[in-house]
Image (cartoon, rainbow, N blue to C red; front, side, top):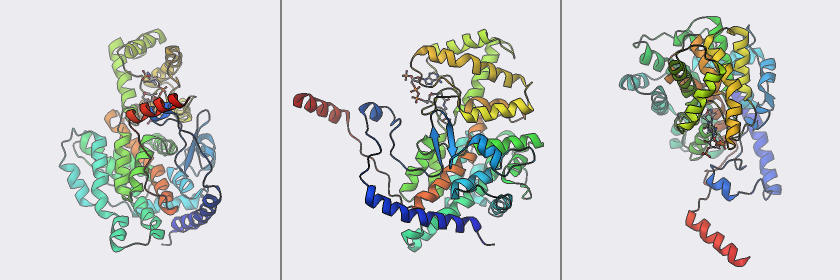
Length: 439
Ligand code: HAX
């Protein structure tokens, strides 16, 4: 079958590569930013220092994928009968910059079905791990174990022309994305359902089949998966999972190594693991308060006790956003439509009323609003996905769409090895002393 997406990507990428060459020749000295000492010691916040084609984040508007906001995507991307966008459509958009037609998305779903065979040794490797291994550890190892199948590594060994790096990167990307739902579902079933696995149903779309293999039936859960796997896909290039994938890929490590690196970053509690931490914190709170429907005053007391024990409130705050996360709002809209009477959902909404003023009153939190992770657990618990240690794997399946389409662009545009300069505190001190002397 002709690969229409690969062809389209190659045309777009060749045109941009040409344009960039001319742009850099003429404007290569243009300054994007100046780095302040505070930023060098402060996790490089806000420094403009990388190029990421697939999405861009605005502190107040939230994420835009190729210029489209989440509500616009819900409107424009091919969707299921209930109107939830298909993540295949978002992947297409991120890769080539155009909203796909329904037929193109159908073609992509079929491609993912055709490429979905996971090597037997990956399942054997997973089966060799203790079942209480954290699902994110299993996920990262499973991705790395499939590196044996890397088209890029094979072609590099054979002596590929660097102008063609994009081609096997695209193939690895497509194969990896196709296989991730199978791997994630396998991890879920072996960890929580005694290894009682469910065979794929290739007649379904990528998310529908994933929901089916998890063993959670029902159209509403499939709709939720389509929404979930769309909104978690990308958040520009500087977030830890995207940046880690980009950094590893810049060494010409293939898509398998790169994505495994990105997933190891996603597994941290300040990043993707926050979705597990949110629901765990909520359940702990309900246990401690001895009620399933706490009052706002009770929630406020519990929030204060979490803060005074030196812990963060999971699901709140963001390194870039300065408004409620549109991904939180999209999940809230879903809950309002489908499950507005759910007890845990109501608790999430009360927390949304209570937490921001408390965080604001601390005087140091730059964004007191909820992020993407504040809502997802309540939705998943409602549909029976109660094992919260698994939640970050769901996030990872979605995040692969963004970081791998960006990896294709990095190879197509010939981006080099990433290698910023570091300095020591001693260097900073002596430079400051010199500046004072000269002043
Ligand atoms: N609860 C309590 N304190 C918080 C806070 C929160 N939710 N968010 C920020 N702060 C504190 C910081 O810990 C920091 O305190 P110190 O100066 O004492 O170290 C201070 O406020 C300033 O931090 P900031 O500039 O507002 O935030 P950062 O850019 O440094 O960090 C984080 C952004 C997301 C890591 C932070 O808000 C946080 O820890 N949130 C809770 C964990 C979380 O929800 N993470 C998921 C984020 C979204 C994501 O990536 N999902 O995958």
